[in-house]
Image 1 (cartoon, rainbow, N blue to C red):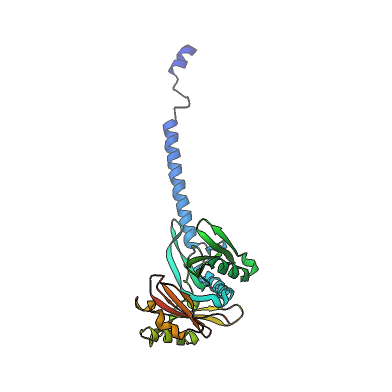
Image 2 (cartoon, rainbow, N blue to C red; image 1 turned 90 degrees about the vertical axis):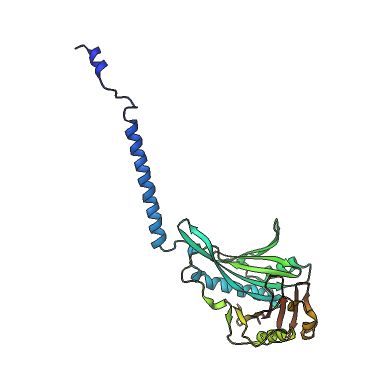
Length: 287
């Protein structure tokens, strides 16, 4: 048989001869690799300890948040108006397979109407230098921004005439054992001057004053404890500024259609509807 005949009978050996088999192998390998990668991610999420600071749980971040709140109260001085109960929100995700939670604590402060930026700047100047606090005009308005350390952020912003809110937040973290309740609102507990001032305001407003109030606390960096005693009231009661005026030492420190605040001794008392939940709060600041 000639060489030409042999060439005509030879089977095809070009690059397309094994293409279907190669594609099947590549598809199988890709599926196997994707499955293996998903399995490794699942095992890591379930078993690996945190490897960076922002993955610390809320239980581990809680003391840093509480300390930051104390610094904010001290920096606010006599302007501190109210310590707001902590919030733990469990609606964030660390990874597609693992949920997380965010811890937030707020401090309200009060100043002259129209001077909210000056109030924020004064607070920023008194915060620790390591926080690198500053106040700037942003597209969202005037903002105080600071870094309290350990990936805990601080922001301050005006919320109403003469009022600013200072917020400490952890960002999304593993829940862990949860947030320790050291600074959270609790019913009852040791009463101080703020509890007596709150009871007096409630009586003046015609509200029950015998129930134990919720207490929110913050440890002051120089020693001592700041405390807010708070109680819910009826929506119409907080509009009665005339009922509270006789209790004020030196007149009101804030009077708007939504809020009335005054000092009695070292305590600041606030009757408020602006947040949508009528309440009265009495706060003893850091000494």
